[in-house]
Image (spheres, rainbow, N blue to C red):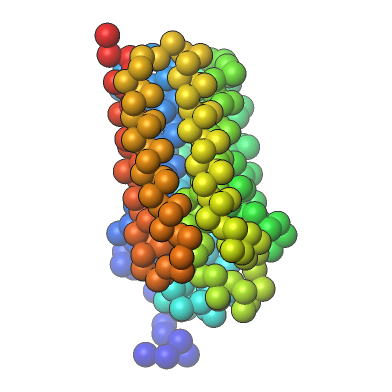
Length: 292
C-alpha cells in the first residue's frame, strides 16, 4: 500500500511501534545508569519503591523520547531506509495521534515523580527539557550523541537525589561516565545511517570523526571506565568491581577493533545492542563491590 492510500489510525499495533515496544534496548540504556546511581548511593541494595519508580519512569521517558524524536524527524525519516516505515513517517499515525500518546506518557511519568522527594521533583523539568532538545541536536551540533548522553545521564542525578536528598560528587562522575558511554555506543549505532545522514544533511559523530571514528569511540569508552572507577573508589567499593570493569574494558576494546573496518548496518546494530549487556555487567559489578 502506498503512503497515499494509508488511512491513519490510532491502533495498539501502531502505538507499540511508535514507542518501539518490541525493542527495549533504549529503555535499558536509559535505566541502567539510574540503577548504577541507586546502588552506589545506597552502597548496596536500594529500596524497592525507588527501584520500581525508576524502572517504570525509564520506560515511560524513553517511550516519550522516541515519540518526540519521530515528531521532529518526520521530514528526515521518510528518506532513510531504516526509518521510512515508522508510523509517523509512513503516515499510519498523525502528529495529533503522536501528541496524544506523548501527553499520556508524560502524565504517567509526572505521577511517578510526584512520589519522590522535593529535590528530585525540582530536577525533573530539566529531564523533560533535555528529552525535547535531543532530537534537534543533529541539525546543529556535530556530536548529537553527546546530547543523548546528557539526556540519559540526567537520570543518574535524579536517582542520586531521590536516594540521598543531595547531589554528591560521585553522582556527577556517574553523569559524566554516562555521557561518555552514550557517545561511544550511539556513535556505533549511527554507523548504520552514515550514508543516509550524509545525503540528507544531518550531523553525526561518524560523519564528524570520519576515519578516526574508532579512536573517538575508544576514548569515550576509556574515559567512561576511568570515571566509573573513580566513582567506585569514592564510595569505598570492593576490588571485585574493578575486576568487572576490566572485563568491560576488554569487551569495549573488542568492539573498537571491529569498527576499525567498515561494518554492515546489521552488525553495527548488534554491537549497539550489546551495550545493554555491558551496562548490566557494570551494574552487577557495583553490587558485587558491596558484598562483604
